[in-house]
Length: 431
Image 1 (cartoon, rainbow, N blue to C red):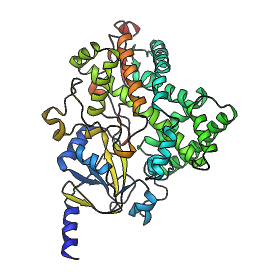
Image 2: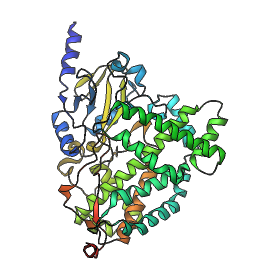
Image 3: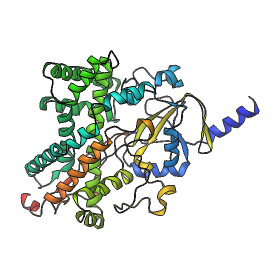
Image 4: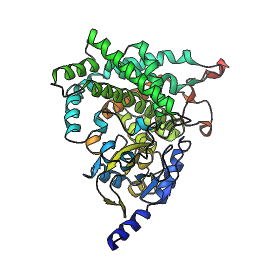
């Protein structure tokens, strides 16, 4: 080993190896622990050998730099050394979140930009803006139905019957997914994101199930095309000279289904929980005009982001960052739910929920060229859903102590698995 190699090895070893909870039971305590461990840390993901590390940066400025670094690729089979060397089990249950898809999330430029432009040509800002009336209609319909979901104690699970209902209704309206398919899509997404006792058989069934269901959707929209996004993407596929292959169409639709409802589901849930546990901030929110609820959305994204961990790419060359050197061929993972509480950026108030805060350099929807295309839609849906909820039910309150809420058992998604609330002052009479 040369002197330079020894120096590089020493710097690599200075990135501590930390253990993360695959079930995400207490994500913010865990991410505070990761930040305390150092600006760059390593971990072992569930189901992988102890010698295969995922690298993470724990500071927001470092995440922004890493997301734009030219030596980061999204293509696992080319650049993840452990995958190429056969160290990643062929039946790894979490593979669907890290490798294998052919949508633009897992493409590098110029292919990534080409596919992004194709999708942007039909998923336009104007199209999102025109959805405002449809979103409001879906929100109000969900609010109309909410009292009918009261349990014996008078409580309603707001996550299941509102925070889920609204974004699933919106994305299915946008993609032309019929009502009959929606429970199947939801079950498949749940299987993808869950990390509690997930088996290789579960992963295989998920893969076949999603492809079958997406094929069914494409066939339906081929037979009965409409103004929906699926029909538009089919037209891109059929008229694009082979630029969008059938499998890429399916994987693109899959990513839209996941990102189109899971992130917004968590955002609405986390925002309601934050407001109900911070009455001073709820009082501020109530005084806001409808558009002003964007402040609630942005602070919730910073303080309690929708995703815990997500693949950020694979190193194609050595990357010096945060005082260490990440070698080539390494898996990079972003910790989005915790990066917003970076004290280097927000100082001593980083852990405080404050909707009057000016949120700078928001990274909850990613950074760089892979920034989430659906972020404007998620923000619009959440703003409308929150404003309408607290307008319709000004007395809404948690039905259980906040400490009793339990997280969804997943290292990926960040949200309580249920949010029981009383929606009016008469709730107790239903017991």
